[in-house]
Structure formats: structure tokens, C-alpha cells
Amino acid sequence: MRITIEKDLCIGAGQCALTAPRVFTQDDDGFSALLPGREDGAGDPLLREAARACPVSAIEVTES
Image 1 (cartoon, rainbow, N blue to C red):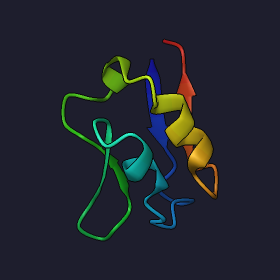
Image 2: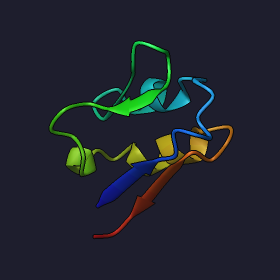
Image 3: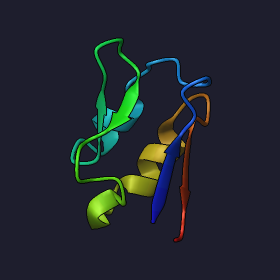
Image 4: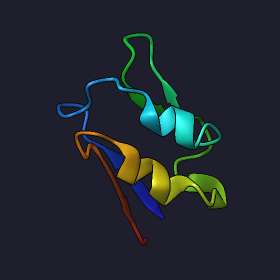
């Protein structure tokens, strides 16, 4: 899987990090970021739900 975070869209709501904390975190400015080594989602079953939870649709998950 490939995860893309549109940094220009992200508002730092944190829903991704709350939904899939093994994949997402928030950077020092409060915006969404991928945890190191989790760039492919690491098989987390909540990955797609985290993308759907984003209020501004800043996260895209595609099959690689």
C-alpha cells in the first residue's frame, strides 16, 4: 500500500493518529505524519478507517 498525506490540506485534527496510532502521528507543528517504518501501513486494519476519518480528506491510501 501507498499512503499519501497532502500537507497543504491537513489541518491537524489528529483523527488519523487517534484511529491508527501504529501508523500515524502528529509532527511538531501538529500535522499528520507517518511513523518511521510504517510508510506502507504495516498491515494495520485501521489504516483505511483513519483515512476516512480525516475531516479534510488529506490522506490517500492506494494499492501499490
